Length: 243
Image (cartoon, rainbow, N blue to C red):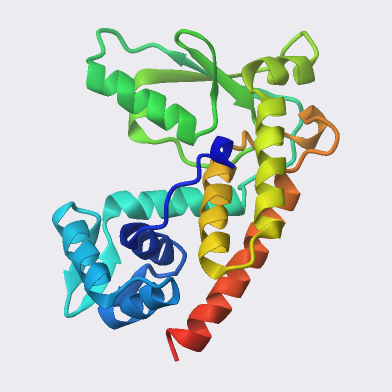
């Protein structure tokens, strides 16, 4: 499963994934210690991780309770969007972003590329990004400041255009491997690790209209499998952590 780029289970990853999965993302230290115990991570290791995450700006600590910082709240919002995509009926139109700002410093260019990825736009050529207009989401400031948006329709087959912008076969292959891995995992630590990889993969789903996707597209099933894991994990937290 090396090709799946599975990240090792650490105290930090357990704390972060747990907080990213609860709403609001705020838990007392004693609860996070109990979560660590579910995975065989010692209390001292969890508390060291909490201190380091506060120092790194990942968490805010107040009265023994830990909360995600604004940067990670934005990550939680992206994860929520990946699980429940903000789609709308598609009428065939595409949104097109053309970079019109001049003399952009490197920081602005980097911020724009990251924002385009978050918006699930694909780069047709340098300075031109596009996607089917089937999503509803706000455009962040770096995009509004640097781009002009247009609406249009391709003259060629839109499915062919979509396939040239996103590697749908590669996404499908990895999704299939993750589905198999998650289905075969039994231990909670193993399931937790594969579920985290599933969620990262869902963040890269282009969320295209069904008519532009190849037959058997695994996105909906992969979401359903993640939701099933999330429900099981929430039950585990309720029974063994929050009780």
